[in-house]
Amino acid sequence: MDPANLDEFDVRILRMLSRDGRIPVQALSDAVGLSPTPVARRLRRLEEAGIIKGYTAVIDEHALGFETSVFVSVKLERQIDNALSTFETAIAAFPEVVDCWLMTGNRDYLLRVVTRSMAEFEAFLVGRLTKVPGVAEIESSIPLRRVKSALARTL
Image 1: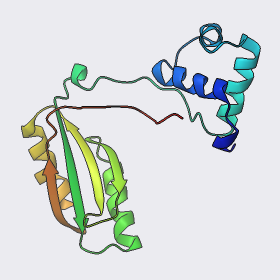
Image 2 (image 1 turned 60 degrees about the vertical axis):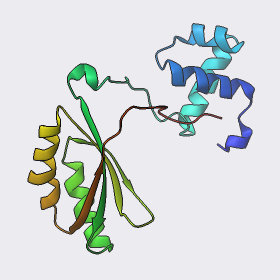
Image 3 (image 1 turned 135 degrees about the horizontal axis):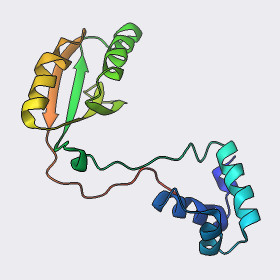
Image 4 (image 1 turned 45 degrees about the horizontal axis):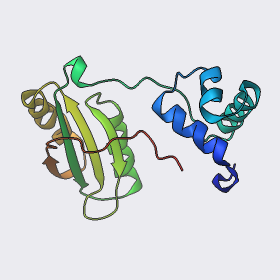
């Protein structure tokens, strides 16, 4: 589905779902100004087109005791297919890494690492991340506070 083919009702549906993924179809239809049957059809179409990829709960990391979030930039010794694959396989096994992005620029990857404390982050950094084959440089940045947050951008 081409995003240019989305109309104002599709956009309203997406915005409402981004605020509350559990909103009942009846409440969603009331909010966007359509009856439930067309809203349900639109939802199915958006799901089938892959615009809505799924539904999930937003977990509060702090409420679970994960007080430390650190952004970690990683530079590999060589940026070749085998090195990238080795690094990505290792990172996939680390529950502390909640986001990992392959980057352009002077660093190869940007990670968001979440731990219970700085001591736990240090243990992860020294005991696990630095031991991943091919890692040449690591730079950590500690965020002071989140200014804006969204799971996805809507039109």
